[in-house]
Image (cartoon, rainbow, N blue to C red; front, side, top):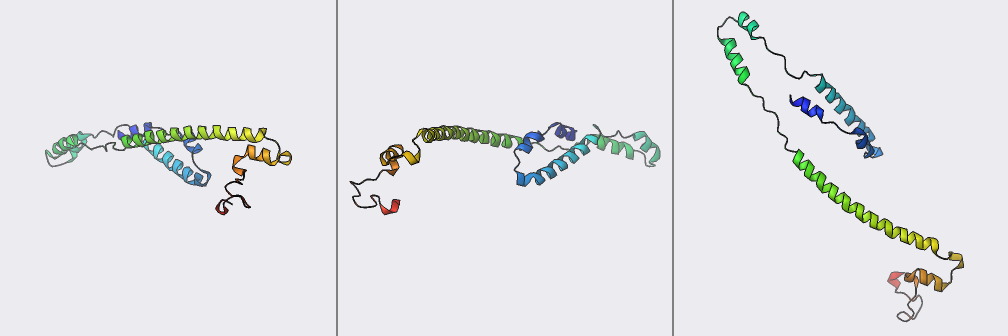
Amino acid sequence: MAGRRVALKSIDWLAFAERVPPNQRSMFNALKTRSDAIAAKLTSLPEAPAAIDWSVYRSTVAKAGMVDEFEKKFKALLIPEPSDTQTSAISAQEAESNKGASVYIEGSMARIAQYEQELNKFKNMIPFDQMTIEDLNDTFPETKLDKVKYPYWPHKPIADL
């Protein structure tokens, strides 16, 4: 039965809950409750439908051959199960997302290394109250005034102020 196959696919609700933002926790709980209710309903159904006792119908139906015809049509009946058309698309999206996430993680690691270097620079520099202008310009080259290019106060273009 198709319901059993669907019910066999389990969801890792703990891993899912870790990724849910706090403002969407109520929607997540509603989804989990509904999913659990559907799963319980699926598991309560029998594996195979109840068998039809055709002999009882043959003895009670007056028209001869009608039950045999129904039985033949019933056995010939094939109920189509929906085909899974989305799993491949979802797998492709997951692979694409994983690739994007790994690129983001690599970029983040590079930024973390850069920020750690900056943090070490700040930890190892002379305290501001003991710094001279030359120390400030050595530590932060962007603060150095260009008196040759801009000989008048403020020694910077007004747009940069």
